[in-house]
View (cartoon, rainbow, N blue to C red):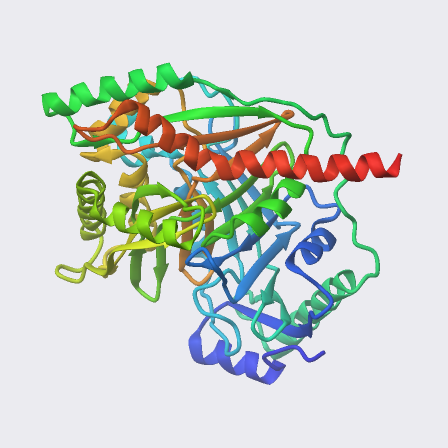
Length: 498
């Protein structure tokens, strides 16, 4: 296989750009590999790893899946961790040292290398100090974790190729001989990765004995959740807020290996953002429909989702429910309110008059629910960075409410605990300066023999508490069903082997 760009081209690109960090790659056929088997081979023996996939519009698979393992650096923030305070500060410093050189043949704005991980909802306290409060953390995970990877594998679904990518970091004053040596080391690293991918054996997860019959428990229960809705409605009537998004946390004991949950989830609930993160002590499995923030080529993108209906039993009922959703004045008003909040978030960091709605109030369908969605975009101001855009948007109005700061305060008062990854952001901050993150919804955290699922609903002045409770359960159903059905499958396998 040929390493691209060639050594001569790499030297020319470095000289022309003044950069110090350039990707190189090899294309290899992957007709006998899937993202799942490629991930299992690459992640075997690594404490930290990830698999990122995408289905456009929830139905059509996106062009690339990305796999990373063995990061050269891992950072964690929060109580008892090496980083306290705003986790974006050290991340920004790390990436600032990179003068990235784009190369032909690699997708711009995608995850060819950088920092991969999450920032919790509770990091809002560093971006907006008025929201800070001292609350218990029932799950007990860091406020953020980032895996810094300069080598990744991009799975190209269109051409059935694997792009095995690494980067050359060029020290100051390096000459052609130095670059040639680094180029040779990068090529050797790529070859080593290809050997792993083409190994005959696939190290499947070791699945402990499946225990059937486990039930889930809600931290609020139906009556407790409805009481939260009533409490927040009183604040809406008083004029404190216009909308809020209270959530419940579901705990589901399970011995299911988290990656076996992901394998099932990706087939039954394809979504724009599908991810599996293994952080050693815990794992995150998700299929999020909602972008939080994307920055690419100086443009900022946001993707508000608000308004929900269950999927129909057949195409006719599905269409009827979609029409009903778009005709529902409450759902429309809630969505428009959150679109306005999204515009406000973008206006803080974008050029005046550049913020626009590229798509307004369309219906997108997912496995168990359908949503009203809009797409917003704007041009980043010269004095602002992608990090500024991220800080402006987190948390999304669709997970907090409006006005945002007061809604966050009242939600904390009602829920009485930290949210953790729910409502936070997962994704990557690229060496190129781009970023792509989704909201931590339709997401499961596997830790200590439990799967944790958090779900919320948007509350306005005329919300019906029982209906809002039911909406949260509809949103939880895809993940709860994933666990139950994957348990049944692996239990049958284990019984057959006895």
